[in-house]
Amino acid sequence: MATTSAIPPKKIHASNRHIDEEQRYALALEASEFGVWDWDLSSDIIYYSPVWMKSIGISNSDIETSPKFWFDRVHPEDLDKLQLEIKAYLKGKNDHFKCEYRIRHQKGYDRVMLSQGIAIRDKNGKAIRFVGTQVDITEEKREDDRLIHDAMHDILTDLPNRALFMDRLRQAILSRVNFAVLYMDIDHFKDVNDTLGHEAGDELLGIIARRIEGACRAGDTIARLGGDEFCVLVTYITKGHEVESLAVRILQDVAKPIIIDEKEITPNLSIGIALGSSSSHTQPQEVLKDADIALYEAKGKGRGRYKFFHDELMTERNSLNSLEMDLRKAIQKEEISIYYQPIVSLKTGQIVGLESLLRWQHPKRGLLPADEFMTLAEDRKLIVPLGEWAVPASYKQLKDLQNLFPNTLPPYLAINLSNPQILDPNFLNKINELVKTGDINPASIQFEIGERVIIADLINAEKTIMALHKLGCKIALDDFGTGYTSLSYLHRFPFDAVKLDQSLLQKMNSNQKIFAVIKGLIFFAKSLDINVIAEGVESKQELDTLLQLGCDSAQGYYFSKPLPFEEIKEMVSQKNCMSFFKKNPSD
Image (cartoon, rainbow, N blue to C red; front, side, top):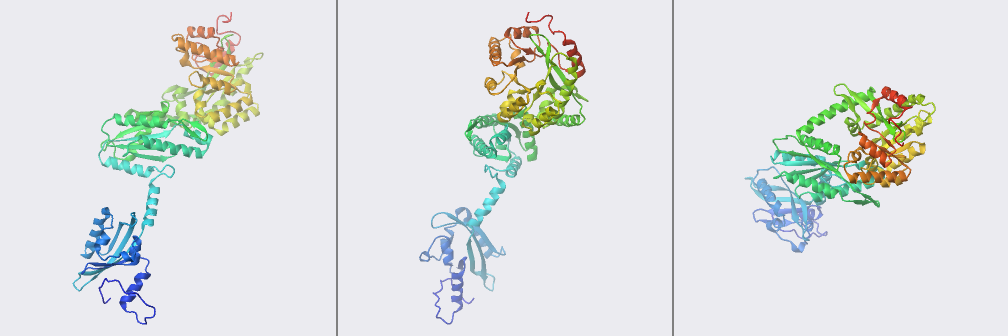
């Protein structure tokens, strides 16, 4: 190119037959979709093309020719970067010039530009002219930022996802500061999806996400790891109680009632907390594992609470994992035994029912009662296969007792139902099959459902109770008197019996208020023609009080501990013709 002038070219006329090189250059600039700048370094004058001016909202009438016109519009945070890139290229330190920066539009908002250029140098290599383009890449950057954001954030709640959370946790470990991770999930969240639908579940997740955010500090990282699991990373902890206060605040804020689809939901969280530092942890996975173990402990203690991780929990978790493996093997090999505890009529003193209770002869730990492995079985989803084996096995043994009762009704079989069995779609089908094949007389089965099972999933519990009642099975409300809505359940469901919880009986003779409560519960149940069974009777004094209050039946160590089938068979045979009492208590 013959000239180095940065003066704007003259207007081109179509009638001209000869177009010199300067005019060709001007035509190319006007036709280009890129904003072009042409900087004469010797005079420090820059020509800005119409497209360049238009990209920042300036008309040709406002044209200027100084570098200051350009640089004054660059975002202050990006100006040094742009000028350093230009300087390094012109001095030959870089092979090419390319730089992204934000520039102020005439309307006041920032646009993102990409500039690239090439220098024309003299025979000594000195740059004498600098020509380049400026392209508006704002929309492309927004799309890139959106893609990056989406890759690192949860779509539903817009919280950081697992990948971003783990990266920030890794940074916390490397920064050598004290930190804490609160690992939490929503108690019984599956029930919301099952009863109200997934849209309601998604709405609940969004509300809880905002409530967790509101309880945390501005610098905390709140993430959704997936499903109903959330995590909070708290850094720069100076006092231990800060984390505990945060956990309490989150639990309280989340537990406020929510109306979804005209139904009131009171959500609860369980929270596991792991305290950490660079000396206690080297990998993010280690911290999350500790917090998860603490979360499991919080759930095991009744949910709706928080627990801190400590070394003993790791030992306990390893023990539970080992116990789970043993239990799976025991179920496969049918090494679980069924024991029976008599239910005694307080009018005749005779056995009217047998509660089926599982026992496990562990190879190292000896005979384990149900309360030492049933919670584990429920948490690790083993309760359903256990029930599929135990229900028909129990009834088969009960049928063997019918020969002992040629002229009278044999004892009914009491079987406990858990929440996973209520949710299992095959449970009712299997009971139906047993009834249809004649293997089960439904009137000789009493299914016992605890209040916590009903509370956990009211809709599915109601569906199951009504279906079993329609089959002709007896239904009992277990743990009666320990919940807040027991009385309303008696009106809502067709219960044949209620079982007074053992915790009430233990205080019955020492606490007048508890005595009055039991008296009222018995009166109310009997007014609805519902039998009352007392659990955990251990003394003559308790028995006498129950007789005084008009309780119908009772079970407990005062009568008999749970026994294996052969022993209970012998006991039923003996007690068939005689009472547990020396004389009829009604005399």
